[in-house]
Amino acid sequence: MPTVTVNHPGEAPFSLFWTEEGSGPPLVLVRGLGRSHRFFAPLMPHLTPHFRVIRFDNRGAGQSDCPPGLYTTRQMARDVLAVMDAAGLDDAWVLGMSMGGMIALDMAIQAPSRVRGLVLGSVTPNGRMCKRCDIWPQVLLTVSAFMPKQRARKIQAHVTLSDEFRDQADAIMDQWDAWAATEPFKLQGLLAHTAAIWTHNSGDYIEQVTCPTLLFAGAQDRLVPCENSRRMDRALPDSELLLYDDTGHNMETERPERMSAAIVDFVSRRSAAPRAVPAK
Image (cartoon, rainbow, N blue to C red; front, side, top):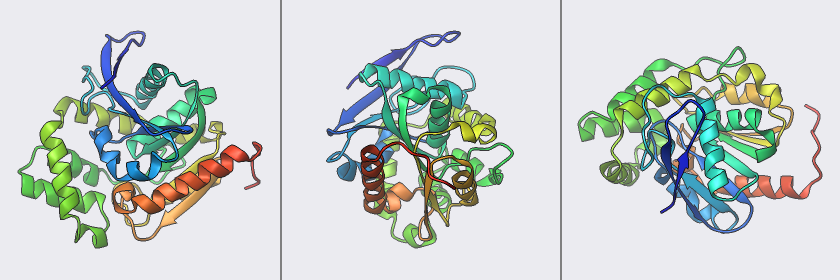
């Protein structure tokens, strides 16, 4: 599997793991706190018939290196651009989940010419416009990576899944455990990712994100208030919002078919239509 050596000014070189599947318009998937590219697996059968899908592991996660120090989403946005360079992509659609959405927002602000459009799931931009997230679910999620298996499963399911889905999630949790066994969570990486989340602020500059943006939010999200997606939808120049009453934070796990169909429809419509910013 390919890796790319990242050489950012002021940082020692490090390697990022990446992979690609499918054909069509390029779609880069950016994952959240501590999780590898494997956690996008539920979406893949539905996306690869329509897109050239690029997945990778953020610094500090999965098969990528874990550079020392605390990270920022601005640094991690440059990491994604390095992966795109390695894949030969001048630009791409970018799907970011949770922290991955923060990274995607910073990409659109730092390098707008490289981002055709954004798909943001369970994302808060922080800053003055947002409803502050409760810290305790995030703390529990981080700490659970180092707890005994059964206790960790209960916490992770409670924090990331809706009540309805949690009752039928044993098979999903088995898969998460299997991935964690081959790609153990890295304490340094989790702490560095947490720092990136809490120092992120695109909310104060959200109007600079002018590309087409599709927002997904789950009404049962315990990590990120869905109100933040409503506020982003009002503030972004060109956005659409899909709010699902029956999903939690990990909506791509709970409703992959429905989410993928909405992504395919959005990209198809926005690729075919002349670029125009609708009136809000």
